[in-house]
Amino acid sequence: MNTIYDTESLEEFRRRNAIQPHRMKLFYNALFKHSKGWNEALGTLPEAARSDFETGIQFQCLELVERHDSEVDGASKLIFKTHDHHLIESVVLRPKTGRTSICISSQVGCACYCSFCATGKMGFTRNLTQAEILDQVTQSNRMIQPEGRTIRNVVFMGMGEPLLNIDHVFSAVEFLRAAPFFNLSDSRITVSTVGIPKAMERFVETFPKMQLALSLHSARQEVRQRMMPQARTFPLERIRETLVAASRHGKVMIEYLMLAGVNDREEDFLALEKYLKGLPVHINLIPFNEYPGSNLQGTPLEQRAEFSARLKAAGFDVTLRYSMGSDIAAACGQLVQHKQKEALL
Ligand code: SF4
Image 1: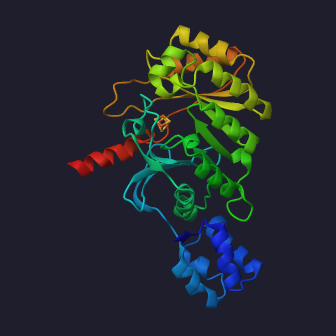
Image 2: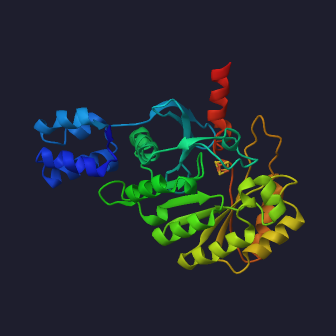
Image 3: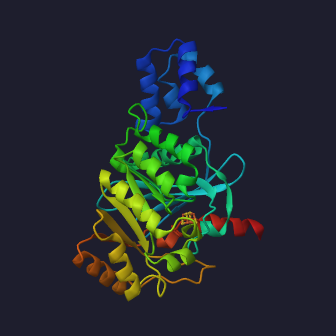
């Protein structure tokens, strides 16, 4: 069935119902700019066309099955169910300073098997479609509309490796930035990757002003391989070439999850400093949300702060991140994993 994200089919519906373009604009505004429900959006169309739209177009393709609101920092973790009964996660973030953001999933599970990630332990099931990726944003917008909020930042940092689902992710990104739909500026969309050079190059060529984030996590090849098996295929030297090319269009975000005794020692600092020297990057130092089934521990705050101060002293832009939603298992894949276990009991 066609979805509300299927622009070509919607254009056919418009033509066959002889709807004026300005009425269609009202319909799209209701759905994507004002976060209205299906009936209200249908109400913007001529009466004679409504039943055709109602029966031929699917309003939402995910079912929201759980919502967990953090009591600590205003994050909301959402679990959606796909039509074939798979669970995926999104996290809405309401930072006190800054815009409302959403971290969305691009795959069911993930084939990258990063050692620190709950999603990586699930294995890979399938890619999400463009509509399933976008529906996380649309439904979250409707959820937060009574708060007077709208999603202003979209980050592809949830379940899955976005650049291994490149076609659907690219078409979702096109929809997010398109003026008639979400109309987000390029700088408000971030795609995060474990580092797949050819796909990163394609991303930068297609969307030069969009944010690219590299999950680096270590500048030492052997440590990185232990943390992220994908690193065996794409060594650090190759990824650095890609970073050089990407940084011609602006700063690249570097994600660095700090794990005690794994990537937070003196040799790790020195390797990171050397690897990123001369590149216009912004480094995010991320705390680890510990979860059952993982024997890893996060670097204590004091040590993270010192690591951050030393990077700043070396001339880098650094943000020391604090854990958001730690009381609601907001790290990627944790809640779905928990829910899957519940279902087995
Ligand atoms: S961190 Fe990202 S790429 Fe790695 S396993 Fe988890 S979801 Fe996949």
